[in-house]
Image (cartoon, rainbow, N blue to C red; front, top):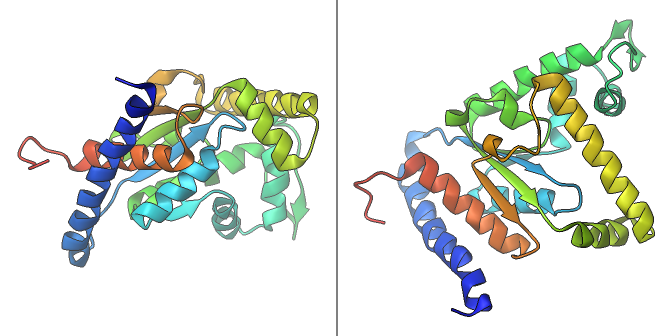
Length: 235
């Protein structure tokens, strides 16, 4: 089998079941059926956010990335800037530092995690959502979400980050290493888990061997199979 043909097989497989999923969704839409959410974790520069957005668009799901901070700011009754700053603090593990004061309210890193868990839980109960990062897959039980990890070769990640931020490759590599270190520290500190351990993900996709669109279709197919496939299914 040729390499090109082998690489197109997963996408073709997912395409076929994505079409079945769309027909299935239309058939049960009137019943307001609950659709489990998808969590996407990624290596910096792997294109994970683009994959997640494409998945959300394909399934008609809500997409929570930066939008998650908006929801949290309303829940916590603090300005979004507080959360944006605290995100940087939490990733550095600075638990003893008050990020910012607003209207006599203090939001500590520990309180950030409490609100994060509440918001992720609320999104999960509502369903029909794709959430990027924030340790969402460690907050929710495995039976309530499809957990996806997006990876790519370091050379490709450096190239993407360098182009995206218009910086030198060596600076892109430092940026990737820094972000990766902070994400790992946050997950270790908050959930006592290793973010790179594959056992915490239902599916790992390498965007170095397939396009963003192919990766998204594969996620959609895996989601359908995890939650809706039965031995009685005709496909």
